[in-house]
Image (tube, rainbow, N blue to C red; front, side):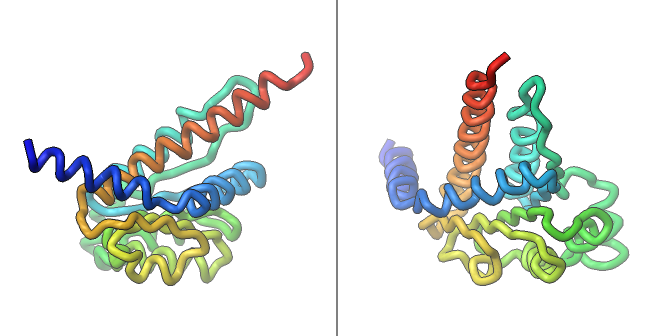
Length: 193
């Protein structure tokens, strides 16, 4: 029981130390992209890859409201054939940047998720996105790593443990989704028929 309580206590402390202004900046960049009809790309490895997929699902489907334009969001972790082709033929470090070269336009948003903040394939993709004029959002832990030095907006989870960092990233996804869903619902209820 003590191990369970220790994990939960650590997670609660991490959530208490989360900088809400950084979370709000992430939401603002995502909403700016939405209002400008820009695309959003999400990337990450391992647990962060599943969070990237979850973000794309929640933004793409979970915020859909009748009569409102939808988010144009893609997780670059979801096409196994494409990922393995780039990994095999070029390098795993370029698996996201090569996909971005096919899809991204200046002004689109790229969200990079890396618990350590040092995943080379995420770092390369974020550098490329910045170079072509894309706003970048980094979600990390472990002090932020390289990711925190190169992104326009950063949410750094104050933990050096992968589990709690990944837990908080998934919670952040749900916070963003809930915020947007409530904003859309509020806007719809304020419209005059």
